[in-house]
Image 1: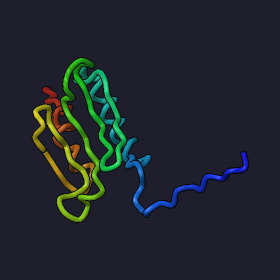
Image 2: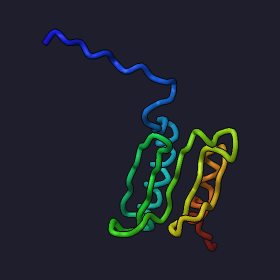
Image 3: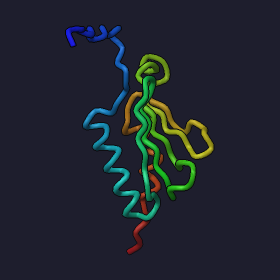
Length: 114
């Protein structure tokens, strides 16, 4: 009982990448609107060492329709945000979350006739 285990010293790199409050709030706002429009039914969040991933599903037993990935290691290159489609193709990549979510938000637009 007298053995003291030292706390591991960090190398400066976090053990887990996560979403900040404003980022998650924006993603969940989009998710709520897509659920109310009948497009999505389920979601999953994966927080890993290299990336934080939000996956949106039409049905729970499918592959995700969209994946929103945050990879801080790509911040200086292509941008840390990526929108990935169901087939695994990168649909949009950039530095700004709003710009990356724009193709999904366009699905919510409806033409209103007078």
